[in-house]
Length: 485
Image 1 (tube, rainbow, N blue to C red):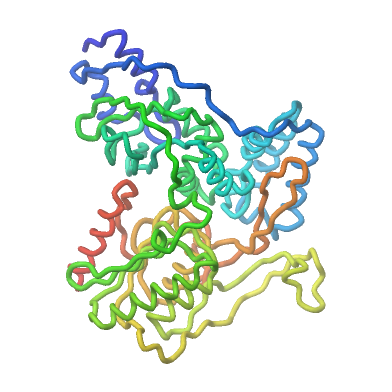
Image 2 (cartoon, rainbow, N blue to C red):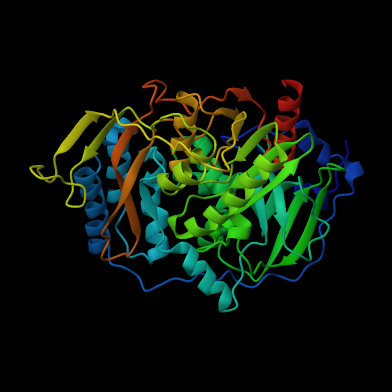
């Protein structure tokens, strides 16, 4: 095989000759891209402007240490038992290393990039450290004329990072193309950096978090260059394509501070009379909008006498339990149910009952049941399938385990990336010097069955989850329902 020097230079820049660490080895398709018949070229482009970082004044080492110590002590004072999720010896060793490296002044962004190296070791997406109000900060930055990386990404089943959507002006980049580099940063490098500080119960949830926060993470690691040089491997030809595209000025749903109901909720009736309802969040601020959508949808499902119902929560990162209880479960069952069988909680001023001692830990079984109202004029009484994905989290997992363990619906998809026994009631830990946003949960739940806490929710209807083309997974579930009566 003959490769000219320019082609070799570009392929090395793209990382095509290196394994994708912690994800997957180079596929045969990637190797094909190095073949000389691909006509690899390196377009002559002017240099991009220097990357802009929205960095605040620097923070002295002594107060960085003070905030880090405050985070560590805050977790231990509020969390009922960090060892439920974390390997404490490993967590403590990592914390000691991070603290010992706080020897020079840092900006808030730099402090976050350093502190957040502890996030993966907590093994809990309800706990960790983030940039403060990062959604609002991104929106403010864009309104002031800034840009973010102009694409969304998802992991394919083979572990490669693929294009999910792209901003206008980059028509050469297609859905499903494999992302190779942005501004010379190859995918291997970007993923290693981003995964090293992503929150999540498991590596699978860390990847789901990374996908949906990619624009935010890229900005904090690599800054804003206004325009972005994006290189992909074409899904159609297996050849590299390089495009310079203007940065994005809008944010994906998961990075919007107030996504609207039209983006979060949707319903329709699929072929062969299968009802479909998509619910991307259980935000209490949007309860009125969810009420309206579910009232309309369930009324239509009843009128059309749909044979089965799919509730899609693949993009639902959680919220408040009453929303799924009142707007979903009440409309498809009369069975009593609960989302837990046991809990361990830290007593705080906000949850203390008379006689409780603040700061103590309580552990107790939970025997209460939620009973839907006997009468509901729009109640659906056919089979219900809840379609979950790797981003389904928090209250959404509570919805899944309640439905599965009490037999009121079947779960479809792959095993969830989030663990089936969740934590909750998240509290903030004050970080006065850096202003970073640190959180920890004060309660840990055991699912109703009391089993499987170290695993995700295992589906009743196993399906390959295709995040790059989510409609294919929905179609597969609809086909399964049709074939199984």
